[in-house]
Length: 322
Ligand code: PBG
Image (cartoon, rainbow, N blue to C red; front, side, top):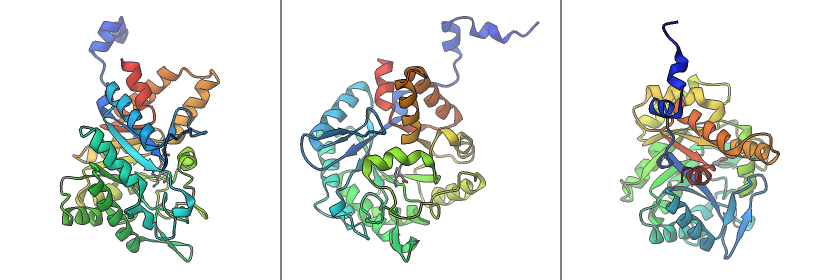
């Protein structure tokens, strides 16, 4: 045998010398959930190790993570039901605790990069990402709500706006609104190919944001479709998105790979709540080795072509690198 591939695996020095893919803490974005109040830290039952945090606890969490090298955070608000309405007006209200938290985090940690979520579902009494009329999700009127929300978040200090709603035309609409308001430096990470997935369940528990009727299949993509992701990517790219995101990650590695090949902008992947919960549950039962399986999952997402990974594993992974 002239060619023996095992020679290149003979010890760890050789293996690490020729390793093709490495996940760095710099590539990770850590999603965090927040609630109004003080001295509040409640674990999300279906997301062991992830908490809803009041401002005091949020600030200490961010500090701890920054010390581990995690420097980018995606913040999500758990909003009290009494503040939700059909038009999601709390999303840009001056009293919105989420906006206050964003500016407090930026004040304490100016070097932290803060990503925010733009969609109506945390604020909507219908639990949908757009305005509901006669049981339908109305696209174009929703864009104005998304634009107001985006500008409010930019005013609070957001560095990256993350439209996660899958309405048509949102990236251009938000880009225009941000530029008009003087926020041409604020980036857009578009949820480009966001699938109508079963893997968002634990996230909806965290925010209590599940749709009150029906499902999200008229706006989120059909898990069976790949070609369609190219249309979404084309639109988002030409509408000015700075990053294109695929979500979820693990069941959609082919889509991540395709967008990486086709578009010269950074590709992000959202390793979603259900993907984290599956491994946590298996590890708690002793069925999988947590650290190894986590590393393998993140590696596979990076190998598929993701430059950036949004993941609930971010802190654990960073700790493991220490
Ligand atoms: C809402 C939103 C969702 C997630 C991020 N933003 C859920 C949904 O679309 O219902 C899911 C994230 C996760 O599961 O970790 N616009």
